Length: 485
Image (cartoon, rainbow, N blue to C red):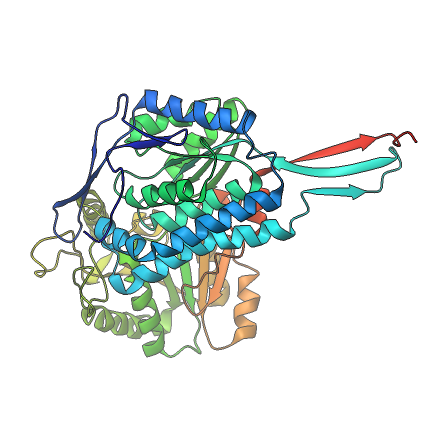
């Protein structure tokens, strides 16, 4: 097979590959073929407690958080080198587990490892211990110390990149980590654990416990965890915030989105249609920052709708290993059923499926779905309010730019946005008015070395860059008398 794990039937806890105490094995289903393609160990509640104990002991009594930063970073550089050597496996794992196109898989693997290298670079220049002036002490210092034990809980859509966005700054900060990947996509986390072991990270610094929802909930509620770092749905994010709020534990949440793309009148219709279509089919629309609401002037609405529909009809749907495919399958049968549910809701509420909206005739097997355009959408409809997480675009009419901004901001989310225009000054002006964590002119663009996160119910906190490192550190002020002699 393209992916070779040394101990897929084991969990990684306290530096050892161990059998599960009370979990059930996890089967990985190919979205391309609907067949079981991999099996790994599954953790239960007792395994979660054991992993927390290992991480707690490694943080409280181990050398990781107290060793010189340079020594920690040197070890992490060895880990990054080990991950680089397994780039092909990481790419293959993404396609195998969630149907990501092979043409994109190499980039997805590189980006995940780059998260670690970015965190290392931030750590090399970060002021962990700084002397400052104070009228109240002869010597005053501001010190940044590791938060402690981190539970990193990630979803299935881009699992390696998202896990490394949490593991990397946590390790640089001196935290210890419990990795809880989604049961649909556990393989990359195994590779991370194997590379950490190869690099010589001390026992308990990284632990791996794939699991179902019940065991994950048990981990989340363990009070010996100092912080939860989560990417996933807003519904689960609310639950995590409530649980952490009970004892004021730390958390960062990267949640859902219903991001808007405003099409200004200077943007040619044909060009806008190509941008919007190529965007919505990326990872089959299964990206939290996906531009799922396109807002256009009423007098250009019908022309843009027809152009998008024509572009969508030309999209080649195929298996993840098909070099000609422009869109692969949805990640699971459950996810396809979710998309189909929203199609039915949209029609029932009065929107029109101009193209798509169903399973394609080919390929015959796999969790495939056509790229879909809804017209006649108003911003109060369910399909314009809730995250569908599929290749479904809602086209909404506006009266003018001010109305477009109002519509774009009329959402509980605030993760991403775009303005389609060749007028950069106009784009910059609108960017300041949109309540989103990220904005890019002319499509879906992100730089994960910069701060990433959302406004409103799209999350709390940021990942990436120095901001991401800060979220795994506590700040301590120290005031001292002058040293005698």
